[in-house]
Figure 1: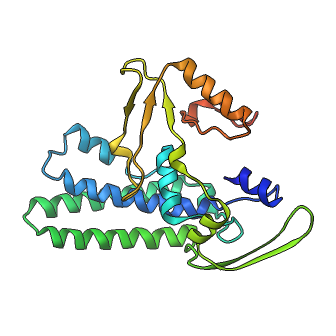
Figure 2: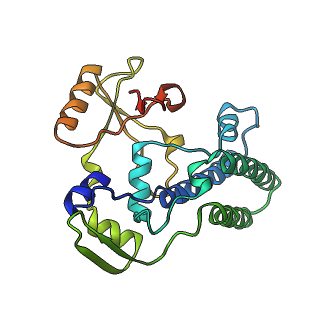
Figure 3: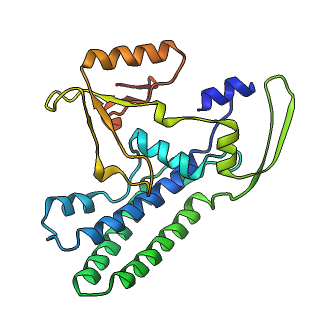
Amino acid sequence: MRHDFAKKYNVKDFQFSQNYNSFYDRLEKANKFYETVIETAVLPFSDRHVAELFSMPDGDGGQWANAAALIDKYGVVPRSIMPETYNSEKTDEISEILTLKLRKDGLALRNLTNNGISKAEVNKVKKEYLNQVYRMLVYVFGEPPVNFDFEYRDDKKKYHFDRNLTPKSFYEKYIPRQWEDYVCLTNAPDHELEQVYGLESQDYIFNGQKIKFVNTDIQVLKDAAIAQMKNGETVWFGNDVSKDENRQQGELAL
């Protein structure tokens, strides 16, 4: 998206706000966590699914479909409209705090559900917890804009001004994308090839696009990635960042 915008509007140093989308990414993850806690409350805490749920209720990262669904739902904004903050660039501390809160809230929701409290009352408590998460995110990331004016100078020094945009209208006007035109390829030899697989536990954008992977031969995956890069398009890929990054060289291995 950034490369497309920079090329189309002649602004080579343009940046989208990662802070804006990170804000809603964490809010959606919190909501998914609360909903799943309620759904699985009847299971013992020793259940593998429940244990996994509580092991990491908050964190960075996600899948391609998560990002596409997040952008479709909330739009995007220029970095100048919602700049990065200390916490948006160093997320370990807020992740630790949110993880503690979510676990505490999750235990409370399990207890309410298992003690015969009505579904309506449990949902009321869940919404209050989610409001608290929202306020915490505002403290550390800033409050997301509802409307904004977009002004910039392109690389030819020409001034541009666009008034009264929303994050959604900005996205639809400046970066029209058809996310369904893209598919994620994977190579999992322990699963049947030429089949579509999902990750339901990671579908955390409410009413959003679902995660789908086409399991294919490794050479097909390589050829597709090379063809896309030769066509001038960035290739999204998933990896273990902590193990596959080289900050000194500026490299991230596939």
